[in-house]
Length: 164
Image (cartoon, rainbow, N blue to C red; front, side, top):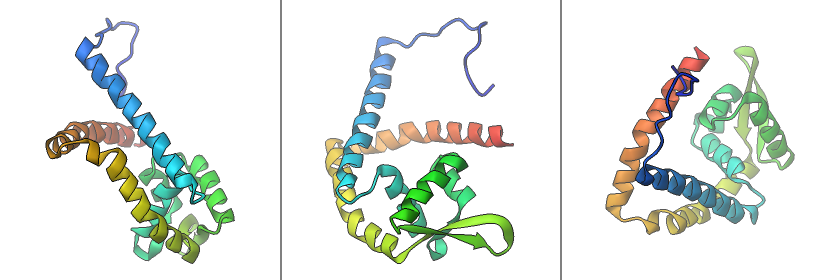
């Protein structure tokens, strides 16, 4: 079963501690993403733009198949296509045909995109550190990674099952 909702299930309400943890997670995620997005706006980028630039900058040849990039950024192909179109207009990325698959398309980091990620990455990492990492002890960083890893693995497994 990929979801836990059913008319036959009795609600298993969250305890007070679980509710506080869940709400703290939601608030932290939303506030942090909003803050990082705001910090990137001065460079004309959004968090989504930055994520795409990072993925392309770390890929061989600074290119990825659009389907792989959609998977890596957890976006629908349609949404990614619109995002790439906006980034193409800003000369950050280009699309190229895939020579071995006529239906396939690559997103490719342009020279301007490479220069942009090189310029913006140090500031972004400093902001991640300032707004997130530096608020936690090393023990909490370790605990957070340990707590999120099984959740991520579970959700990725469900995602793969849904696509199979």
